[in-house]
Image 1 (cartoon, rainbow, N blue to C red):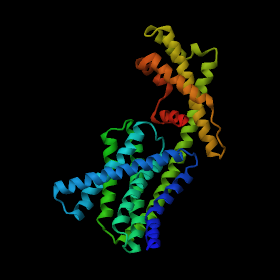
Image 2 (cartoon, rainbow, N blue to C red):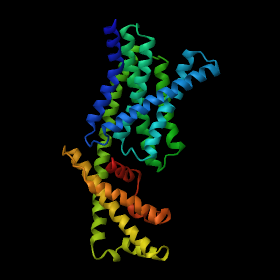
Image 3 (cartoon, one colour):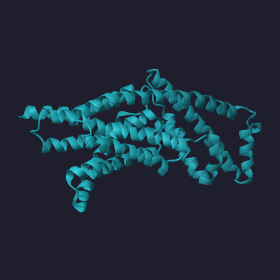
Image 4 (tube, rainbow, N blue to C red):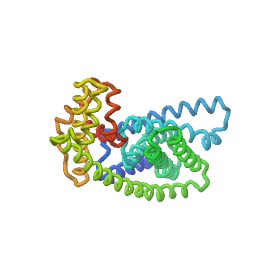
Length: 337
């Protein structure tokens, strides 16, 4: 009996974790770290708990039949709670490219699926092993895959629109809910649905990773050249005659001399860290072990000090020089990890 329960637990829990581990191995730039993935899995588990409480209350309050609710209400509630984790990560610049979006999205779904299958393992301990094949290879992987799709679509919409507003969030959420609801409706026999998930999801993830690899390469190449040129300009004696130098000199009419000097210092540190971040990614992509630089933490702390010193208004005036896109802010977070 104990062996049978262990077998069902392995079938129900291991496939989604193995799929997640494979996604992390495919990440040649090592954009995500294991500790971050573990944290996101835990957040996915919390999302599962919150969804269970919300679904239980909504079923009682609405009077819906459980089967009908699981097809329509459950997917909306569950995908919304899972999506909240991704929304926070994107808002806090913890996600930069489609690769880490997909990995973190799948990690949220994996955490959710682990809690759900542990619950059903207790409720359906004596069910046929075929049920657990469907739950482990179908339902659990679907939870991760749907949220990976949401995260990738959200990131693409945010980049295209330049902001994470409702028009960037709602279409991916609608797609996630629709896929989840279609799976719960058993439009195909359960085994066929499981086969469809196991065939289509790896192909989709492979395409996402190829596209993201090209995006990372392009961003590193163009950004590295721009940052290097700006740093060389800052180090040259002709900086004051450059367009950037004249722009900063013009700020003396709005801010005091010490504030402008701090802005120049902030600009230099930012560019140095940006070059360091892109260099780290290039070394990771080539399999070179990156030694932690203690100066990075010092420079990040100095940047935070300068931000407090000059104030938000002064920082806004040099943002055009920093090219602070979402990915540029992400690279600073990556250095601080």
